[in-house]
Length: 350
Image (cartoon, rainbow, N blue to C red; front, side, top):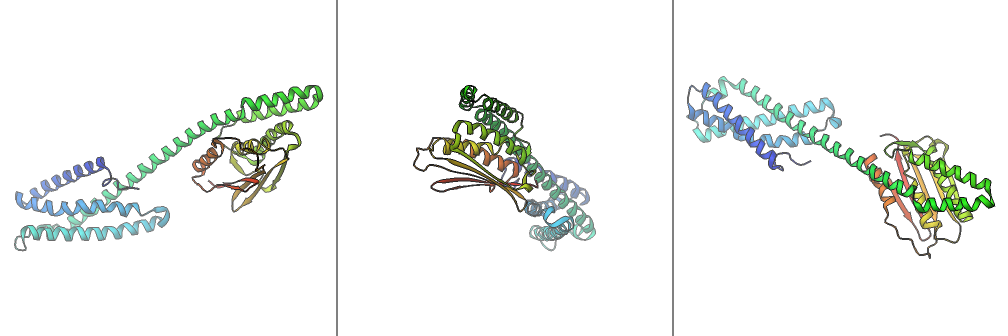
């Protein structure tokens, strides 16, 4: 996080205005207590306000690198008490030597350092607290803004994913091929055609009724994915083989809605569709170190002409995982000459 004053033109102007206002107030107060000696009041003001100008800027780093979640409340208080003692010692020492520089030892006004030293220390502590609180408010405000931006990005991505999912799931080619298969089965195998229509209806109802922002159980996700794969199996017959190895302990674990769908679609598009030999789509799920780990892989014909694609499906999965879990290491792709596999991890504690 950048310095809110040094790296911000607006913050720099506001800071200089506040410093000038503080110096003016200090001059008026000193002028009153110095019995009308404007020269001495001006020197005292400069001697105190000039070190404060730079020390207040440095307090940002005291705040920036002190996290209450890391050191605890007690550690935070101890940290600031120690920092306050060091900062105030520097402040008073610099002010003292500046007055010597401006006035000399013979003309150094004793009131400030002798008769009113307790008021000076109190004022310095109040000033330290004021600056630190202002910095913490800035940190809170920036974190709040970043959180709002994060949520906004997630909402935008969800909307884009919903549109992409609808285009993919209600793809005219998919519907056309499914209905065409139903049509051919109505004569040769009416019972099978009726079963396929029921599965197609259930699949579309499930897909359209979900909010991609929400989480779902692996059991429900796999039921819908199996509907999709069974419909496609009618098209490709024995060319499409399915294998599931799902640990029973994983069935109720949570993952984002419809996040597996693009992987199965890619396996159909780039594996089954392009191969004349049987292609097996293998799905494995197990619990590892508090995370649901899913691996979806398929063999493919390495000599077949690859179908062109824009990679939106896998890219959307990566972006959704990043925004939902704030991690970029939850998806890994493994590809060999004849096998393609996507490894996904879903943390269960958010």
